[in-house]
Length: 482
Image 1 (tube, rainbow, N blue to C red):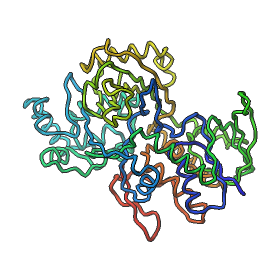
Image 2 (image 1 turned 180 degrees about the vertical axis):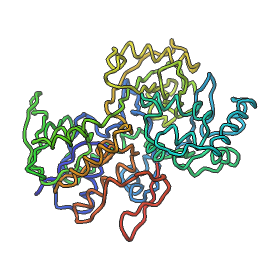
Image 3 (image 1 turned 90 degrees about the vertical axis):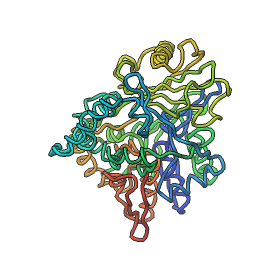
């Protein structure tokens, strides 16, 4: 049987293989994952019996087909969890989504008046262009609220000024939110902004449970999921991929490099890496465009505390620039089964940085001490309550929307679209800041393309509100959500 090679065993890659089997493609799916665990950035890691995510992963979607897959794979292992999150700013905690009484109490009447005055000024005299995130957010919230609740955190996450981040990011992630809507939601309890949902589903053993179950389903249905396999080169003859050169375990405790003939390829590894792995290489202008693509890297320090969780939130956004941590997860609030002991807590201290930063190379024990001190500095728990910890480093966690990325993508897409048997999907495969469901949808459509359908994968979740309708074919409308 002909081979469908799927590069990457995250949500997109696994979904591509699963969908290929579901729709009866006459291809043998082989998923190649570099890590020992499947799930990509949505995998679940463990330490000393405690389970934790690489960031939190809610299961909420308006895509019926994605919902069906989740239900089929995970079913009774889903929990329904309440969302609770807050913002830490100027030494205080603000409910998020906004609650009017809490916000007024924390800001005070004078500061609230200044926020409203700033909002009115920018609604009357907005920026005439909205090219950057700063312009986009300021036009909708006013300069004062932008600087309080957007600027510091966003720049901590992305490592560049908001004046260098494109408005595309805001349009994709927070397009359906405005100050007037936030205040109305706070007063009435209404909420139609997908990123601010009040309830979500979550596998009882973490998001990795979903992808481990999908891996098992693929294998049970006759496919393959190989872990610890690195794709070194994608070999091509013109615009036809002929084979993959892979570095894999040799079954004797060592490793071997072999060529794997392929008939179709669905890629979900980072787009830049895909272009740089092609042999022969792409034209110089395409390689130059690939090298323009940038990524933000991610590091999580998991702290094990000798006491129950010191706060009830699923996560806390840290807007204060007095500490380096950007977001704090409380994994027991996602599911009690994430904890090895109910009287202990597992807290994830998330840091957004680049692999070239000095902090990336710091020893794990130093990072655990640093994270414990920051947990205490915020006032959540004393540093001496930390009895254990571990560190996970995640390169290329987030595709960056800088001033050059769209021009680079136009060049790359124009060239890749000429291939007869290569499609690229998912967050990093499309350099698109997608959530799990959007990544899955691109993979599902890629599999359907192999059945003769014609879906433009690059247009999934492009400048759309998460609640807008997206047409997958002329007969069916599917709604996207975060």
